[in-house]
Amino acid sequence: MGCTSSGGFIYPRLYSLRSISEAGAAAAAAPPPPDADPAADTSPLALAAAAGGGRLGDTTALSFEKLDSADCYLLDDSLSLTLWIGARAPAELLQPLLGIASAAGVDASRLRVAKLETAPSAALHGLLSVIRAQRPHLVQTLRCVAHKARAEEPRSPPQGRGLFTATPSGG
Image 1 (tube, rainbow, N blue to C red):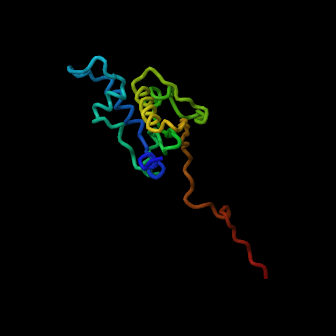
Image 2: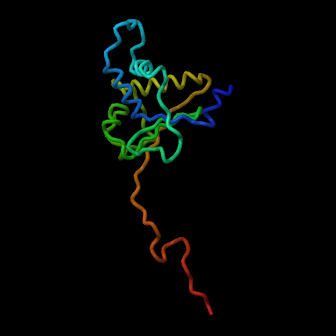
Image 3: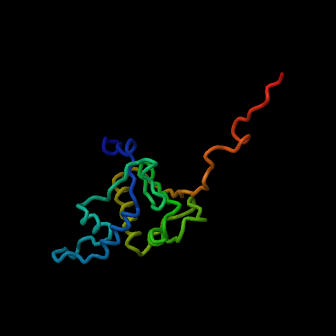
């Protein structure tokens, strides 16, 4: 394995699916340039890549602080692909990408990412194809995980209910 292929182990790539979805939808809605080759690839991802200078999309620095629970992300660590679904991801993002209205009540481990007839879905599947083509020697399966919103936790445990409780010293 070369240095370029090994980079993903050290610096995994995190793609915002909101930005990929928006780029795919914008590219599909834009008219083709007048000098476009009729035989050229006109898929939403190809159009979005051409509009963005041939890049797949911007990646986000991989850190907890960068994750937005109102977005979905694709994590590529060179060995596997993980689709992270934010707890507050809106239906406007989830419906065209995954065909679901909400992540609430969905068992993400059983979710399959079908190719839908929408520009955002085509852009997501195009990105998956490009990533997988970069490493043809690996079988990269897509695993889905969902962020669960949790109730506000108390800042300090109630008296006598912490990990350690004071016991009276015997005398």
